[in-house]
Length: 259
Length: 253
Image (cartoon, rainbow over the protein chains, first blue to last red):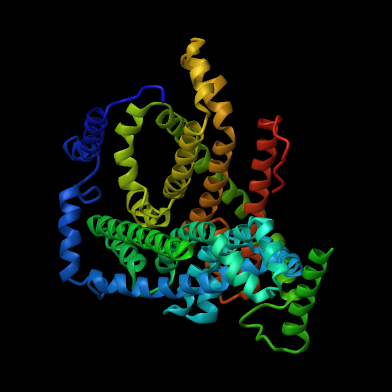
């Protein structure tokens, strides 16, 4: 825009930025900015990450913690999508439903998902059920809102054509509204997955006895900073993988819609 | 009209389910009168180390501090990255490396570094609020129409005037979108951090009430979390309307 830069310049600056980031990290050790115990170096964190794959911490190896988290995430996120998307589409089509659900939804919207932790634990325990509710609370609003917006933004001509052809309510939703709302729905799923994954970590920090959140909070009480950081990296990487998978789903859905 | 009816019907159903029919066990979900009692109790007697206003004030203070620091660093950084490709290429790697880590996952690290005091909470709020501020300010600058930028450059607009008269006004809608997301993220992380360990604050009420198995107080704290979030978002919306008087579509909440 203001300064067009060539590809080679771009990559050179990117390399400097990347190296600078790690150099800064190492420099903190050299300058004794913090005791090594509190600020492990990148290679130490990486070594810890690999070590956690084989040696259990807080009762399980890294893979098992991750599996426990993914299981809860899958349930909570799946439920949010299964309830949120159809409800959002239906709200976009039936005016009365919109009027009924919106005030309740707006009332709950501002309550942070993690604030559900006490009730979640009280109602569903701390195993799978409780954290699932927290993930649901995080992932549900974007799923619903985006499906709703997608349905409201459908070109009126399609709806007129559908009603002229005598298409019923159910088929209008599944065959007109849903395909048209796919990009918006996918955007909602991506936001929802991000918030759900974060809420899961929050729930596990507080109540669970396994999972990635539990791993890092146990490492925190043992002042094992390298394990905390290794856990954070694993959480970040899996979050990115989930996002990539949803984008794959979008490409697949759009291809089928156009076919 | 339907909206009001829904809320009233919902409240009546709540009353019927918990108080009249006993369909819902009060140890699972509180009755309306219990919630009112819990509310009066925390307001007059205090609960979990303090009275209501102390908790609310403490949480508001932490959110305000973390949010303010994050925004005053994040927005300029986003504007810079949007304006200069060089700055973007240089800063983006660090940003991309740190961004995928969910803000809540920083809580244990913040506790290791800064203990259970306010400092660790401000740090996690900062981390949470920083990312949306940067991304949206960046996008805002990138979305300024090219002719506008070219005209400004041709007229010799530079430095501070470029920022104050072109970049900021042009990207203001996106900056505010970022601020809203930042504010929401601030509340989420604060509540989580306070649930894990705090003397005061809305999250600490939740934590204490969960330990005491006091459903009415849990509900009171949840409603307070929602109200504080809504109130601060409303304030931000007012600021948004002030900042952009030229926009016709006003922001409601």
